[in-house]
Every structure is written in structure tokens, then in C-alpha cells.
Length: 295
Image (cartoon, rainbow, N blue to C red):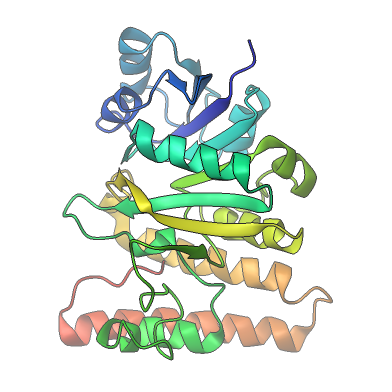
């Protein structure tokens, strides 16, 4: 029987997170079967044994090397067959209610291309990256300078993470986070899979832009939620991760907003993203505030 929902998880140094993540997933949803596929980008860290011993119903793929986020998700997608697909991080704790709610919306609202529930971090706060605009240069400046954090309810300054909107509402957004992206297979086949030129970051934003340009909506639904432990596998090397995110998002802009390859536009975005990164680092060091995540 063809499953209703395929859940694809790319694991990387996820031995501590993969068990709770898989245990939180239902085997059946909305009267249809759920298939789960784990692509292990770091075999040998113990993830293999946990999955195969405790979750024999999960399809486990070990490519033998770190393929990156997009390429590994594409590999898992190629082995899947569900009508709907969820790309899910291993550092998440899901629940049937949130999954069923998103499934129901995709079934009843065919103009939705991608949907995400509210993602909540371990401390109970919202993971702001689960609903974003496609930020303007002004939005990026406000995010990096601290204006967005200082005036989170002011639309003029809050455009990056849309903090002026209700966390518990539902509305169209510019982008959602790769930690949870639910999409219909027919939409993904139409717009194309993840761009493998992006190794780890930027690929979710790139997919959102392509889905929106194909005429579909990107929807955030805060009426249901899952837990996102937020980057457990990369927290040990925050500085390298932050730079990689800035660089990847810059490359997304160069791909989509400089189609003719203009040198002037290319330098505009390079300077803008470089300034955002420098400003964010300076703000952190000056104020002693918590690290400013680029997303």
C-alpha cells in the first residue's frame, strides 16, 4: 500500500537526538500509512545501531559520506513513495496532532505548497526561523543591528522573522525552516528537489522561493506545534556554522535576485551580507548579549 506520508530525516552526529525523534512519529496518520526514512550523513557515531535495534520499521540509508543536507534529502526522497513528504530534522520531537493538522490543510487547500507548524525550542520559546520573510536589505540590517530584537512588535523593524505577527496564528510567509517542511509530492516534482549546490544551509530558503514562484503559498500555522532542539549537532562549532549560514543565504540571493549575473548586483549582496555578519558579531561582543543567529 502506498503510504500517505513519507518522513525524511537527515542525521548528522545525531546519536543523542535520533531516538526521541523517531519515537515521537506515528506509524499511521489520517487513516494512511507513514513511512520514515533516515539518511545517515555520519555513520559510525552510534546512530546506525540505535535506528536498526530500536526502530526496525524505519528505512535506514548510509551513503558512507556526508552528502550535505540537500543531497541527502534528495536521496531519501528518491526512496520514498508517499503522497505527502515531510523533511524533518533529527533534533525535533513531533506529535500526531501537528502532523495530521498539516496533512489536512494540504488536502483541503491545494494552493498551499509548503507548510510548517510552530517550532518551539527546549526552553519553551519559539524558534523564530520557522516563519520568515524573504528579507530585504533593510530587514537584514534590522536583524543584525538589534533593532528587530528591540522592537519585535513594530512592523518596520520586525520584517525578518515577522515577530509583529501572532505566534499562534496562521498566515502566508516568505519562508519556513528546513527543520520541518511538509509538501505534496506533485509540487516537489514540479519545482524540483533541493539544489545540491547548497551543502548545508540556504537550501530551504531556495526551495521556498521556487515553490512561491511556481504560484503556491508558503504557510505558517501556529495553532499546532512541535519541539525543535535547535542545532544540537552543530552547536559545538557555532562560529563556523554562523558564517556558513550567512554565506549560503548570500548565495541564494545571488541565484534568485541576480539572474543576469550583474557584477554590480553581485557586489551589492556580497557587501550587504558581509556587513550583516560583521554587525551581528560586533553587537554580540559589545553588549555581551546571546549569540545572534543568522536565521
